[in-house]
Length: 579
Ligand code: NG1
Ligand code: MG
Image (cartoon, rainbow, N blue to C red):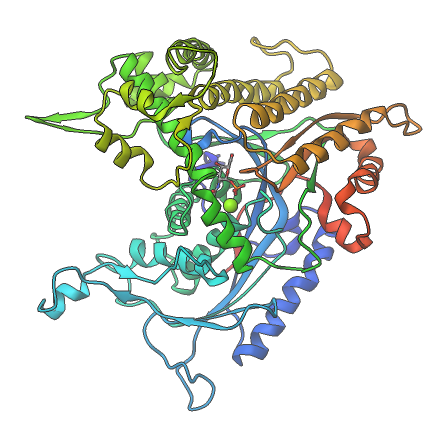
């Protein structure tokens, strides 16, 4: 049997729900959702769905805000998922399809009654002027209108479709035009909570449009890794400059394993089995219920894109600016020079580390993944960051815009254009040192976390028994949270409350001794959303009760709503389809 590296494997096609959800009991819990989806599809479209695409949300165990600096992260897929039923739309009858039958057109419905039917179709935008010959128009890329200022649920569907159109129907196409499609969406990943409902939506949409156009049956079928890359590009179309963590977890995850995902020299995902007694419990700090499914709530979604300007995208800008300053300090050749002209390039903190260590060329770059080298590089970088990213004078940690530009070796205009264009900068000062320090330290924590999970007592960390493994993992998670809060400034007072409540379980008498909570931290982008806590398998129920009772914002909520706010997860299967 050939064992394929996780990212090179094909997208799995399943035959039973037990394969999808891992156990009969969990499968039974979800069966009604699948049945309802199929039933409702027939009611809404008067024909049967031919495919169902599924993609899960994810929880990040450790490694926050470092994927876009190109450092490895450690997520796992969760059971919660988005399902999309779809079928090619049959040729129109006079009454059934008043929308008509234009090539590639989409009639999209959502099981949530709040979201109305959406009809859209791709066009080919030509940029050659009005008088181009028809053939030239025909080879122009496909286009769909995605409004970034007021995002709606169907924007994620469109984002998925966009990539399919331009990767598989452009420039040379397997079939000349995409088929018209009917789709119906449902899902239960809590939106805007750091569990990546957005990646689940974009991945499932990408899969659905591939399946319905027959791209699963030929040699064109993408591998998991290719699907990740398409999904990352697709999600960027919705306005967030994200790294590749969420899409990797949603696509590549395998049941029973978390994933160590690294991004250079190319996407690599290593399934890692967690200690037997480790259970991860998610808790939502910002209950937005009782909607059973509210992904696509235009408010929540547009808030993410809007607030990204001074939260997420600003952090991306700060870490990239830090990398620019360090590369200048270290005299690294990161730009290309063409005669008189210098073409500036964005470099990530990971790339600066690699170049500094002299391991930049691709084949050698892989060596840097060697734990010891990478760890050593990270420790060195911490020192250089302290030396160069802090302001020259005073004891503040933030640096003024002028000083930052001065230390970048670039002119003001070109710096602003490359680093500050997509962000809403309300401040004139930047925390480059604290952000970079978080990134390097967090990258070190991920390496340790991975090592501890793999260890029977490895060379780098010698470990005793299972219990001390759990303690080390928990400690790393606690430190990660504290760094997100203090250095990266991406937590939220409510999230901090929830983390405190979780950790206080350690003082609770369970009948088997004190509650075994090993660590608790925010997960995902932050500024709200979920926490993830590492709890001993035998104490999970008591832990969940404790959190439900002690977290003030849960007061007055029904049992059902509480159950969707606090839940244990087992690492689940990534994207798959009933194709
Ligand atoms: P969320 O917002 O939790 O889905 C975001 C990014 C990730 C990663 C984390 C922080 C998107 C789509 N995803 O996740 O790539 O950077 O924040 O670790 O924006
Ligand atoms: Mg997201």
